[in-house]
Structures are given as C-alpha cells and as structure tokens.
Picture 1 (spheres, rainbow, N blue to C red):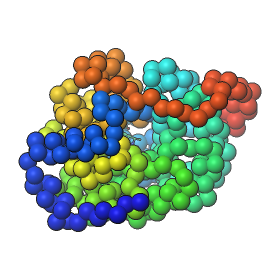
Picture 2: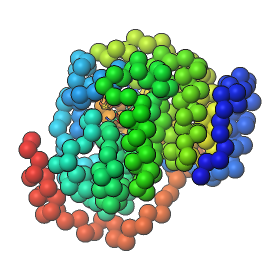
Picture 3: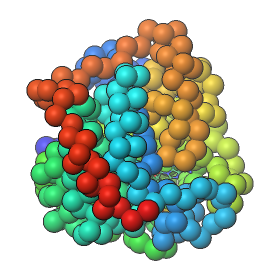
Length: 339
Ligand code: SAM
Ligand code: DTB
Ligand code: SF4
C-alpha cells in the first residue's frame, strides 16, 4: 500500500534539483530496492496490427493517419508460439503482446485465454496490452494466468485531451482499476516528447506515484516520431531531459520497475547508460517494438556486457516447460480465426 503522497510542492522541488544530484539520489534509492547491475527484459509482439479506431496522435496504428503500415488481423497462436519460443531462447523472461484495439470483444476472449495459456507453458511471464477492459474481461485474463497488463496514462489529464479525443483519461484509470481488482500486475507509464510541458510531466509522475498501489512496471517511452502521424515533426527531446524524468520516476516510485521503453533506437549508448544509472532497470529486447524498430539483440547484449548488466532471471512456477503444448488444440483455435 502506498502511504506517501507526492504533493506538487515536493515534486516541483525534485524538478528543480540539479541533474547529477538527482541521479545520485535515484541510484541510492535504486540500490535499496533492487539488485544492482541487473535488468529485466521483455520482448514485444504485435498480435493485431493497425486499423485502430482510436485517434492517438502519436500512434502509427491509428486508422486516421496514413503511415504506410502493413495491417494485420489477429494472428494465429502458432505464429505467437514461434515468436515466444524465439524470445525465450534469446533470454527474455516476459513476453508482451499488443493489439491495436479500442478494446477486446467478447468473442476474442476464449482465443486470448488460449494464447496466454500457450505462452505460459513455455516458461515465460505474460503481458498483454489490448486497450480498455471491463471487470469481466480483466477477470477472464487473470483466470487465464495473465501476469501483467499494460495500459499507459501517457501524460497529464489536461494534455491528454490534446493528444487523444476518442477516449478520456478517466477511461484509462477505470481500466487500471479493473486490472487491479483481479491480481494481474499493472504496467502503466507515459510518453515524453508529445509536446507536453514540465507541469504535464510532473503531473504524469504524480498520477503514477500517488496511485493506491503504484504500477509494478512503469514504461517511460520517448516519442517515436512516425511519418504520417500528427506528431511526426515534434521537437526532439534533449537526452538529459529524458534522463531527468527517469531519475525522478525512480525517486518517486522506488519499488517499481522503470522501463526505458520506446525510443532507444534513437539513443546512443551513453544516454542509455545514464538512464540505467538513474534507475531504469527494464527494457524491451528484440529488434522490433510493436511496429517500429528497436536495437537488435546483438547490439543490446554488447551494451549490457560493456556496462556489466546481467539479465534478471525469473523463477517461473511452471512444472513442465516445453511439454504439454497441444498442437491439435492450437490448430483448432487457429481455425476459428477468419483470416
Ligand atoms: N491499443 C492499446 C492501447 O492503446 O492501450 C495497446 C497498444 S498501444 C500501441 C501501447 C502504448 O504504446 C500506448 O499506450 C503508447 O503509450 C505507446 N506508443 C504508441 N505509439 C508510440 C510512439 N510512436 N512512441 C512512443 N510510444 C508509443
Ligand atoms: C509501452 O509503454 N511501450 C510499448 C508497449 N508499452 C506496448 C509500445 C511502444 C510502441 C512504439 C511504437 C510502435 O512500435 O508501434
Ligand atoms: Fe490504437 Fe493503442 Fe495506437 Fe491508440 S495507442 S491508436 S489505442 S493502438
């Protein structure tokens, strides 16, 4: 339970603290709560791509913008299984699956249940991001064994209205509440570079830090500027500004994993190293995020090696890894997809 409230005054004070002082504070807090030199890695897969009815101005998958994206309907479990096995072989401990939906439909639930069960059988933690969920859907995913649900709040409530008009901030918070009521761990964070001001960044972090139970995992994304989206020409973020947000997030939310999320493809090694120094302890690993590039595995392993960072091992409670995958059953479910 969270009994520390971050007021505007206290948060403002952090934002006015010199960067190197913040990094020092953040690193100390980090070491009190996490094993040093250790990083959690997750691999992402887009399981339904593009044609999204929402109008998020940053997103290449919205149907409103011409982004040259190859659309794909919900993909077959067999294909998901292959990608999950590859991720596991490469060392990932969590497999995150994203769908460009406003929300899943009732008819999708049995299929999603089967996906979760299949991925878990190979010994990976599972995470999904599928848009809004009602209580019933959250419960179904929990009962299927889903470990994490990603649902970002992106920015401050005020600025959110300027970025997305097809849903509101409260809808996002309601879904997070529905996830919390189950036992699924919450993954929620934001994006830096949307054109927000310092106050919006402060409010974003206060929103996350002041939740009754803060999200266990907090992705901090740097906007990936995609041609055709309304934000394609946004101003670049100064890397130090970004590092500062990571350090403040670590100080305000000491016990959560902070993920250096989208945007690493455009960061040099030194910037990433400073983010780790400032308390980031998780990354997306694998050459693709959902639709845009991410550093390839070799490049990342070289960086982790140079920094002496070890991949966090998870003891996943699964008895028979790689066994019990019923190919016939998967074929049956795949046949229910009409694509
Ligand atoms: N449709 C679902 C939703 O919006 O919750 C799930 C997929 S959506 C792509 C997941 C998250 O990716 C968004 O909430 C947003 O924070 C992040 N995202 C999308 N496009 C991005 C971009 N161009 N740069 C950085 N982050 C982005
Ligand atoms: C999150 O915060 N970032 C990831 C994940 N959660 C789903 C997605 C980043 C998407 C970047 C744009 C793309 O590749 O489509
Ligand atoms: Fe759709 Fe999610 Fe992209 Fe928004 S962020 S357009 S909801 S896929």
